[in-house]
Length: 110
Image 1 (spheres, rainbow, N blue to C red):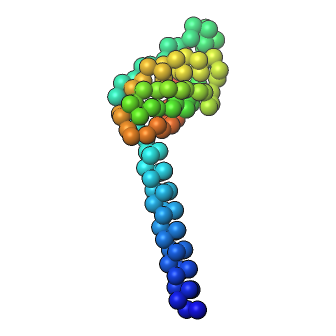
Image 2 (image 1 turned 90 degrees about the horizontal axis):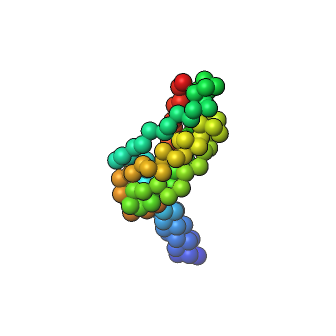
Image 3 (image 1 turned 135 degrees about the horizontal axis):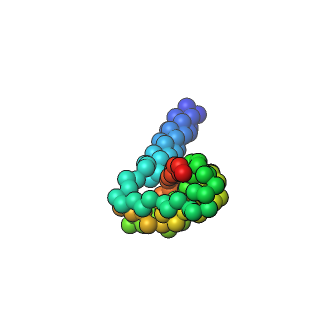
């Protein structure tokens, strides 16, 4: 009976170790990647006339080769967001073995 308990407890430790290892791989895959080239967003003319200022946050999906494959506004004024998304699509990040996501922040001042 004691042998089965030890065996069950060893199996539980192995499963816990595998889970922690898996979490470590997931976390390291989501480390922030360094931008190699950036494109500044254009200030929309309508926003300039309205003296619209603010911060826009854009979530970008980065391919393993470092190119931006997807960009969506996750916060900020929609008028400013379009310009931020257009700029993000020209950014280039350091290569990695996996696809990843990051949040980029843009500040707009008239």
